[in-house]
Image (cartoon, rainbow over all chains, first blue to last red; front, side, top):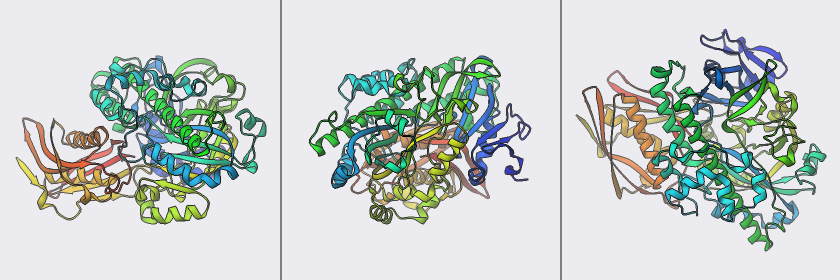
Length: 486
Length: 154
């Protein structure tokens, strides 16, 4: 029997694999998506999410978001909340190698008509100032010690040195610096891989995009106003990147540490080595949590320095200060994390470690974790689509409790990179996109081809699914006009 | 002890797999012996990042020595080493001479790797490799040949 035949329809947007589906499942696995999106998911998604349901301490369900697709260990789009007082585990595979990979959005007070004549110049300069591609190094020359300091203090470290504004920190998750990051828990090798990479984009699906909020794409005027999106065809800048080689090495180091102790010391059996884990309340688990937080801070710092570079570029091109250009940051939100949060489970408040791998936290109005200025409207959520289609700004909803207040993170791939590469050629794609009004610069023609729009799900369908499921509410859809690809 | 000299290289001993890890890149590498397999897997990893491997000039040399009681984890560590040099030194490295010894239940790897720093004008980039994953990672001998399956996180 095909796995999909085991799925039980709970509602129009919730599909369940019962805990009886696979030996060892502690809870059911639930996929939050429309029937169309569920049917498009590769079979590995079901296997992987049901493997996640076997992890110790998992609470209620192993969840997969509407943009889910197969990954390693967890599927991309996977969410798992562990009860840390009931032997709940922490798993690097539930966070991803790119710790705190996330999205940042800033607005300008410029319109498409004002930006368009300078678009090539802007994108070309962004391409120079925000290094992308294989192993790229940034302009900050740090010693190992300075980098240790940076990973303990995150974006605050950058703002204190002139890279950004105090106000940016207020609209960054954790104010850009998560407490408890401990650089003594990271290896020299991790530092070596990251200390040259602050302010770099990376590659793969990482990008920096100049986008337009067309009046017809403003879905909720009141909320859009709250975010400063008030001008017809207003130009915004969105980018997607993470903690670079540093975060990748932290995850790799602890994956190996966990594999050594998991079974012998903690008697935990897993179905995929990428689910390697340790009890959260164990020396290994707490060491990883402190090390992972360094990855979070590196990522916040990385995006902070990139934000600074973007402001510099616009300022140079328009001969006006970033303040005068209204280059306010809207929000910075991660989609590869594990965070300790309070959630109500069966009427009781529980302290859970919520893993989100390719899933975005989307708290509804009133939660203390949300930046004060947005607390009455819910947490801002930034979901990036492919470079050809569009991206969204949304807010979290009060009805998101069923997913531990989590939603999608992107449009989600439907085609492997290897296949996409056979179907498209980067140079031709660049010409096609330019003809459609999107100017793209990339370090890699092959990499560009792998990111072609049809390799992804339809972003509008994914967003509609999150709205239908009541896990986030769209505010504005943005259309790309310029893109820097890694 | 078996060893492998780069000059005796065969036709591309690796292929990329289309339907594993939608957002990542999987490959299968083969070799008549372990040194050949390790060399093929190293090039398969580097070829994910750089399209024109032949453009990497072999001017800088490094020695890599690793040991592990598992042949799988030895290959895993070796590929991680190449990713480390790519990030920390921007070095693109290819194996030149690979030796693998198996004694007292432990595998010992000694590789001379050579290459140069990434030069965006000459090296055609593809996708940066973040990590070697252990998802479906395997090294096995089939019909006298060695085969490895690896999923790289992109």
